[in-house]
Length: 247
Image (cartoon, rainbow, N blue to C red):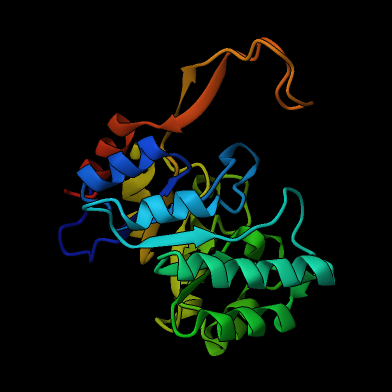
């Protein structure tokens, strides 16, 4: 049960396809994170999908994930150039903000971050779960807040945010309103009251389900012949999350 005196957080829905866009347009979602390949943590979507999102009637603000490849977040010079170009292109295609991240060893890649902030030109910038790989999150929060980042998407360092609620509440206190903390990673409807109790500014979920869609030929190591399913947005789960938020 949610305390009625608590300020309820915003809800951001991760969307990776046209179906997800239609769900986000029908339901009272506050923001979408638009991406591709959620099964690997999300990658930069096509410009066509960005344009489709921006042009969907009733869609909430569109924030686009810019992540050029799966794996870790320590990018070489060419990959950094690609990230900055993609930031420029998705904003030109109608995105309201970008979701980014990069590290150098065990610290934030400040050179990349500065380039992204400059390229964003005042559009909202969210630092994604690369944050959860950092050994000193409090210092990282300070750096991000003073660099112009609007919010941080975090599981408080755990694989699933529900396993790190005390650490999440500590991040909210450390942020002290200087930067938004958005909880994400393994979010489901039953967890929402516990997340609200931490004081986070927003909750992020992909709310996925699998649908039957058999691949008859092998398309790669992650898509062998006979693969029976793919993932898409589960409208019923989104409705349950929103209901848990009192909507």
